[in-house]
Length: 93
Image (cartoon, rainbow, N blue to C red; front, side):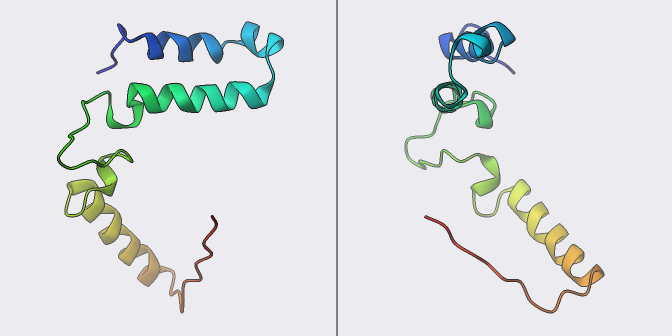
């Protein structure tokens, strides 16, 4: 459920409008929009962050969650179906 009473919600809506995008640089809008998404906890569907289990990257990052198990299972099926021989990972910092 969207928390339409949140100031971060409305600021994000304003800053992605075409009118504001004409007036302000794209780089600033991207950074500010990311800040607003973070502050509103948008990716967690506006649920309050559990301070005991401080995961802010979303429900798919919680080990053993339904979303995580679903991704792991589907990734395994995808790899077998497409007959991958190896996976090459590149980390960026």
